Image (cartoon, rainbow, N blue to C red; front, side):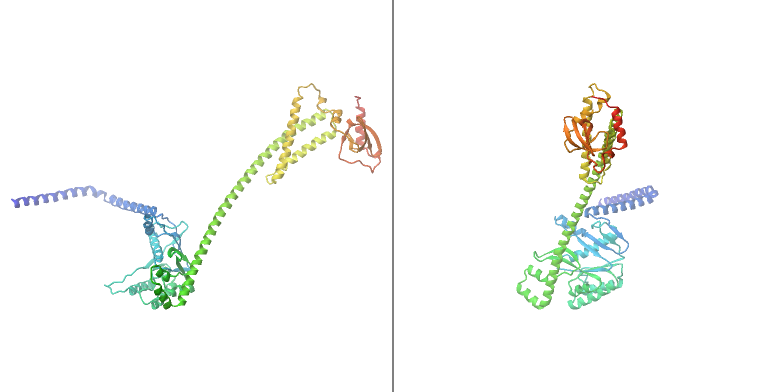
Length: 531
């Protein structure tokens, strides 16, 4: 019974396999005509997924696509290690961005500083961001950064000793150095951590200096970390290479993770040993062994780094204040420009209003002059009205958007005063409009003019319509004794008017009256009517 049941199971499994084959065959027949489209869609989905993944990672790390050059360029501002940033963000800790710049004149950077001070992080940041960039990923740097492309990126980080290959720590480093020297050129980026370590320090430092000299000759670009003093001195005394230091706070005994290019950094070995609890006796003995010269030079180096940090902070504060000042100046300049524009617009409107007032005043004055002529008024009155009109025109024409504010205010005040006087005369004219009057009553009579003005002994006067100037000698009632030259005569005060001119006493009286004046006097005598 068991054998028969088992055979039945085998038959059913065979039937199942045959049915699967039939289904797959039929399905393949349906799919086969669309294989090319399916493969294209598969590749398209993969590319879309890749683009979306890059976009999501860029959004996650605030990555951008900076200006890219086909040649090697490293000018990074506020560069961040993306993985370190994400890890610190989960812990609510800030990350310290790095400013890294390599140029053709300084294409290799030697970074020194304390242990756990961020040297390796700086090195790995350069390597990771450069590789991300050349893989087409956005990198977390400032938009003002400039990046380039390297043909080779060669790395020597960590301990790659191998029991199988019989490689020690130092021999593995030497193998990497050999490959780097063979491959390095002006399009190569070298990243070397703890350069020259793994053997006796004196020979290790010498070998590292010789290898570094080869990198400089080949114009390779690189970032190298070290503790060796001879490499720091080499960077100071050779072209194409620069020192950099990871800053350390001596007072709080903590690393700042800030890169400062230009000066080497101290390893702070004594300070770190004291912080970790090493007995002072051991520290003093170590200081005696290394010698006072080394201790003093390291101390001087620490002081230089401290002073550089102090002045760098000062420089940044001054730079920030200069930026704020520039913004304030730009704001004020814009406001001044806007005020000047508004001022021009206001003055333009004022000038238009003044011109309109001039036109209206011109019409009124012309009407007055016409009425004077119709009433046979004296020529001097007409001349005076015309002079006032011309003065008004000059006041309006002098208004300019470039005039001083006090001058503009003075001119506008004069115009407004004339306008008020004109409105007052118009109002008086309307009040007298209902009274019966003749054409001749529109102008003041000589007696009315006499009542409006008073004369005193010694006043310079002239007869209306005449040009000869005389001096009032005496006043009796409505008559005044006036001396015209050498002639003394009595004249009704209604026929006199004040003048600013002085009498002409150098000529005889017979020559003080012109021909025109004689004709005017004769005309008045003929038209004289007794009151």
